[in-house]
Structures are given as structure tokens and as C-alpha cells.
Amino acid sequence: MLETEKQFTLSNYKLGLEYAREQDKNDPLSTFRDQFHIPKNKEGNDWLYFTGNSLGLQPKSTQKYIQQELDDWANFGVEGHFEAKNPWMPYHEFLTEAMAKVVGAKPIEVVIMNTLTTNLHLLMVSFYQPTKTKYKIVIESDAFPSDRYAVQTQLEFHGYDAKDGVIEWKPRQGEELLNIEDLETILEEQGDEIALLLIGGVNYYTGQYLDIKKIAELGHAKNCMVGIDLAHGVGNIKPELHDSGVDFAAWCTYKYLNSGPGSLGGLFVHEKHAHNKKLKRFAGWWSHNKSTRFNMRQPLDVIPGAEGWQLSNPPILSMAAIKASLDMFNEVGMDAIREKSEKLTGYFEFLINELNNDKIKIITPSNPKERGCQLSIQVKDADKNLHKKLTEANIITDWREPDVIRCAPIPLYNTFEDVYRMTETLRTLL
Image 1 (tube, rainbow, N blue to C red):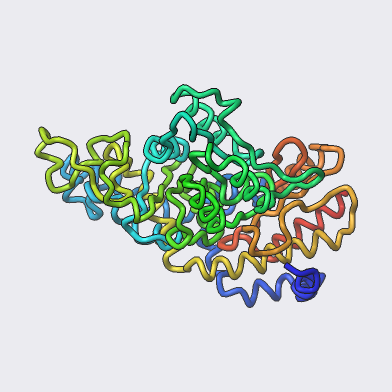
Image 2 (cartoon, rainbow, N blue to C red):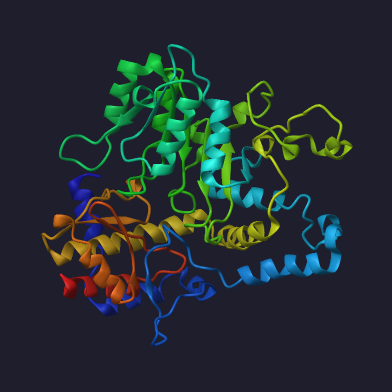
């Protein structure tokens, strides 16, 4: 974003509580806050909850969705697979279309299954096929630890030294954010040795939203496979996975998708791979052709598309919680969510900058197109006390070592007044 554009955007906001309340009054998504359980303090007042990037709040509808499956289990036993209101046999299919809309994919490209790192490993079985000369994997230097461990152990499983096989895409000296030109340089210099790029679409620490389509183009130009970890992107930004051309992606659903602690994840496999049955994979019963699955003694006949990476019948209670959330996302639409998100986070940025305090600094990109809703506030001298004081004031953020407070105003349940009150408390504490 040009500096003049940034100044124009920030100048749209105003100071004061009345302005915040006016924005909430005119917010077309304001009614959705009442559809969530907002945690309260001992006095019965709502917390200011800014950690939906870690665990989303519970939709009030979730209990009803799960209770439906508990009732059907009680009433039908095993016959619930066919006789339940939402039959369990095809239950994952009830989630596919809405999930595809959230990530910008075709239904054949998406499935809900397993958890994030499990799915990354299953996908790397198929899309990481190293040779003696082309075996290295590119990750961000500050990739989420689980991604790093998955990549390291994949390399070691194939007989390579992880210290040699991992290439880190690093920020420039004195900077916090990644530059796409540096990834281009890595690929120009080492592309013949690189088999896979596995990049976080939105970095968990800085909140930077990377150009997924450009990453795919750069990787494919050097005959590399390209995968994206969307843990901090799904339900937050619009990744347009199909159009991006990436080979695969994986995500969790308990952050921005509000599906509950430890709930199932999802994965994307691009349509260009949908009918390639020669792709190596770890398979299970649920990978097999649905029409002959119960014939039992059949050779593996892999389902086309993302469903072909399934292993087992899914946990219905977890999927019920996901369905509750996705039904809400389907009702609202990602366009409306992103529109409010950009405005709400922009307002948050404006108020923090107005504090004009050199003890803190926002390291998340200022350009709304290069971030989701999260702002990462870097604290000078890495003092965790500021985060502790916010928590004591019933403002729930999270701390990431060495020096960042992560704050995510969620468009479905955070308000402009939440943001105003949080920054006023921050002003007092500073």
C-alpha cells in the first residue's frame, strides 16, 4: 500500500467511544455476536476476547447440533449411520460445499478429516517425492513448530539430514516480515534441489498474509510441489485455493471456524490431481470407492479428489460442531466477513497508532490485503507483564515468545467498542 493510501485509509477513522458505538450500530454483522457464548468475568461482565486466532468462541447453536447426534445415537444405535436425521455414513459430505466456499475451492478439492499435522503428513506422503538431487523443503524461518517438526521428520524418514534438507525463507536483516523477492532468489539459486515448498499462508507470529498464488507460480516454475498451511488463514482471509494453483493445503477448524478445542481439520488437493490414482498415499477404508466399500474384500479403488485421502469413518460429534459453524459462515459469506474484518482491524490499528507509545510496535503489515484480522504487537524489552496486566483486566490476548502480544478482533463476535475499550486499557497500562 502506498503511504498516501495508508494515510487516507486511517483518516477514515475517528477517536472516541461514540464513534465506536456508531460503527457497531451500523454494522450489518452486529447481530451475530449474540449467536456466540461470550465468556464473563466474576462480576458477570463480558470478557474482551481477542484470541479467536487461537480458539474461537462457541456458537450457541453448537449444543443443538451435537445434541441432535447424541439423540440419534440414543434412539438408533448403529442404525444412525443410515436413519439419523443427518445420516452418519455421508456426514462429512454435509460440510464439503460450505467449506469449499470458505477456502475458494471446488467441492471435489476439499474434505474435513483428521487434524492439521496428521493431514500435512498424509499430504506429504503424496506430494513430497524426493530424489537424490531434488529433495529439499522450503519453509518460513518462523514457521509454526508443528510444521517444522513435520518437515524435519519427513526428511529423516526418507533418509536425509534435516539440517541440510530444510531451507528457511527468512526476513531481511532488521525486519520482521518476509519478502517474496527473497523466495524468488532462493528458488533461482537452489530450485533444482528443492522438491517442496510448505509455507504458512498467514504467519502465526506476525500475522502476515503471503501471496499464495505467487508462491505457487514461483515453486511450479522450478518443478516444485507447493503446499500451504492455512491454520491461521481459514475463515480469516480468502485464499482462493483453486485459482491459486497450489497443489495442496491443510488447516484446523478450531480457530476462526469456531469448531471447539482439538476439533477436526480439513485439507485441499487441487483438481489437477483429483484423478491421479498413481499418487503414493497412505490409505484406509474411507479412501475406497463408496459404492463397493462394504464389499470388504476388494482391492483399493481410490475415491477421486480430496476424499481419497481419508482413512477412517469420521467422528460425528466433532463434525456436528463444525457443521454448526459452517452453516453460519455459509449464511454470512466470506465477502461480508472480510469487509468487516478489514474495517475492524484497520480501526484497531488506528487506535494503537494514536497511542503514540514507543514501548509497543505493530509488526503486522499495514496493508489490509497483506494481513487477516490479527495484529501482532511487539513489546519493547520483551516484557510479558503487559500481557499479564491485560489478562488481569479481563482482556484475553495471547503471548508468543519472544516479544509479541497477538490480538485478533473477530468480525463475527468482536465489536468496535471492544476494540476501543481494549486500546483505552492499553493506554492506561502503558
